[in-house]
Length: 140
Image (cartoon, rainbow, N blue to C red; front, side, top):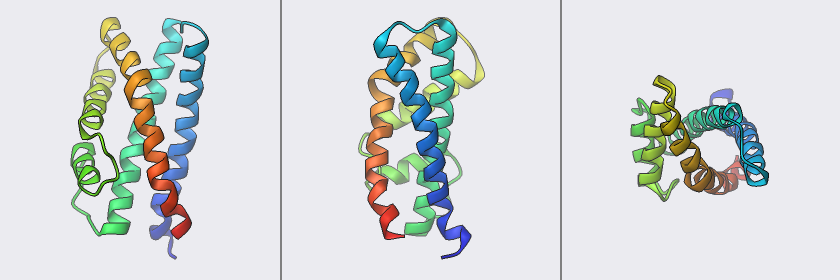
């Protein structure tokens, strides 16, 4: 197995590390209300977890299915849905929208909405992705 072949596995491991940071913020939010600064940290953890997640999907689709014409998160999300790697395509598209909103502007009411979406939808989708991809790791 050459380095290019295991790139998706390396990216998956980085995704897991990012997810662990997001999980810590989610767990803290279950214990108490987060400060504004902690909410910003939760949003940032979501941003890099999402970035790594869609790149895992892109690398996986390239390696396992020979799909090389994926130019961004939307293309990748559509293909991942088509191949059954994600089940809730609408939520993943919503993640992209949220990611773009948090990256390009700061508005406290939008930030609060996104924090709620992270806690109620996006976090669970990342957990599902972990379980979906995990069996393929043992195949390599």
